[in-house]
Length: 407
Image 1 (cartoon, one colour):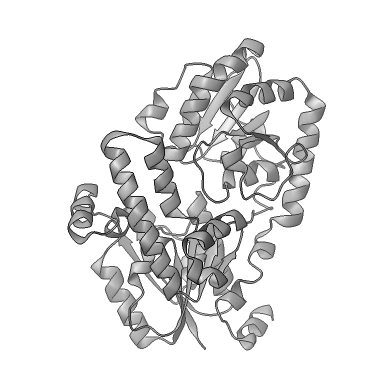
Image 2 (cartoon, one colour):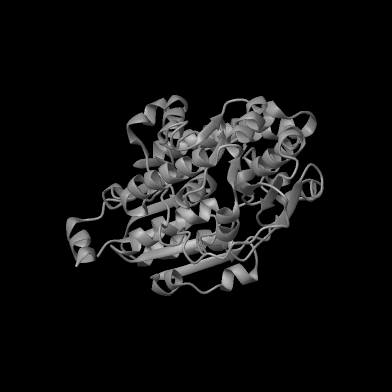
């Protein structure tokens, strides 16, 4: 039986952040059909050693601690003229595992999750390559550069320029290139026109059993009024920028109309900039919690005010799956096949966010209607089985493999 080598930049369990959610479900899908060998990076020893039912069923598993200091990766990037995204994830142990697995196992497909792992595809490998870029990383760094100034703007401009070339070369090398939304796929087709026929959108789904409001304990800070909630990894630059802007620019306007309103920032590893928001303008920085669902279900409105965003925002899908009304920026709404005004509300400008939220808070019936519509949409269109239905064919699995998996 032909097997798959799966390369990803993070241990794909537990599925508790955007990239890990997608890689986790793709990995589980492929493991239904054939033996899968996994190589990935772990941020620390606890993550490396964490148990999982997925881990148990892998044909082989190579986790490597990501220990290279940022300054070392930066120097390597300057000397080699490579993006820092590549040098940060360049590791001899991964290369050895890839070479050994290809030499001793019948690998018919290398599935690469996230662009920085594409550097491990050997030049002489002649099997199938499926590259899941997820979103266009080079465009993200270009946005950072345009939005910044000084040395960081130069660094981000360099990263965006080098990644753009690298992504185009990887696309040419691959048999199929996946993106999380048609918007991202369309953007990449303009940047890698010669590979346009290989580029397809494969969206994210939602675990509907997990994101079910029944039997979820509600937790929230003490409050006299409405609760607005933002969820996410809080050392991730777009999330930091989003909550900073919302707390400082939008919350003061909301408090004029709803003086008891609270804005809860819920998620792991809040940066110093995020922590500094706590206590100002009705903002509460909650940090990591045992069950993010308890905060989603407690919210009157879930907000996603991202100023820079790529791909599909899982935080939006999760809130919609739990029947919560969502107010999202245009950037956060992009890629989600939902109707503004029916399934969620989209604020096209920062100046619009406060008014949209205040109007919604004043209309309980409207909030309920949006939540019900959102939940119905997610349950009909955003299951993982539906989103990943074509994945076995994309990876070139033989019909007998799929027939055996179905038994």
